[in-house]
Image (cartoon, rainbow, N blue to C red; front, side):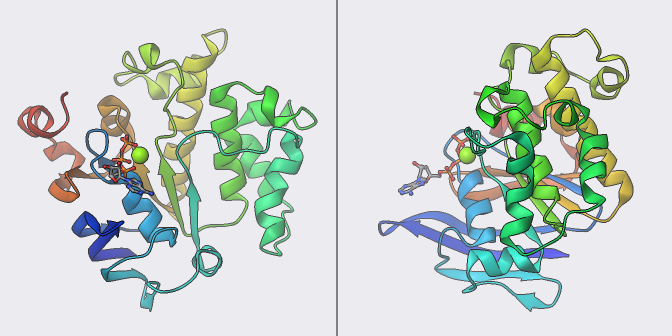
Length: 255
Ligand SMILES: Nc1ncnc2c1ncn2[C@@H]1O[C@H](COP(=O)(O)OP(=O)(O)OP(=O)(O)O)[C@@H](O)[C@H]1O
Ligand SMILES: [Mg+2]
């Protein structure tokens, strides 16, 4: 279990996160939602150690992570895929995939097959430079690279951001269907379906817990088990995905 409890974070003396608490269990997909600037990314950064916490605790099982370095938390099983395209444009897809695990001194072996099963498009592009991939393909590459570090918990910050938002809006309950008959569809739509499908596949395996920051409600409804909604630095609503009512959406998510 990944347990965040009463975490507070400040930037330049002004408090950004107030008493943020949340839990992610292995095999579950937890959606962290909220409008722009409410503290979603800061929460993920606090968990992986990229910003310091003023107080509160972050535990992986029984082990306390606050105060530990990001590399140390990564070795313990946290893998973070930041918002935006975080790949090396001048390295090949294969080099990009290897780099995270190699930095941790891990062998990749058969894990690579698993990544290629989740993201078939990467297998066709191993020798291509990362920078020439489409936005959706780069996201798949970043998630694939994270998986090769064998995380216990995967933290994804808006994996669908910037992938043809006009089509993401139409996704509804179609992620599954798209993954099945995605061939020939628009590339962006396909990438979103692949990412959604990969998250679902990981969830089915039941080993990795996923904390997913996501602004697209339909994406969360389709693949999430539970949700937390943030507003101005605090968690203001939480529950099972089925409990995410229109009222909550209207109050905290609609712009
Ligand atoms: N390094 C920083 N220094 C100062 N303020 C920051 C820093 N990073 C973020 N902030 C501020 O902290 C608040 C929360 O930012 P954060 O990036 O966590 O929000 P978010 O919910 O991820 O937003 P978005 O949906 O736009 O990605 C914002 O007001 C932002 O301007
Ligand atoms: Mg953010």
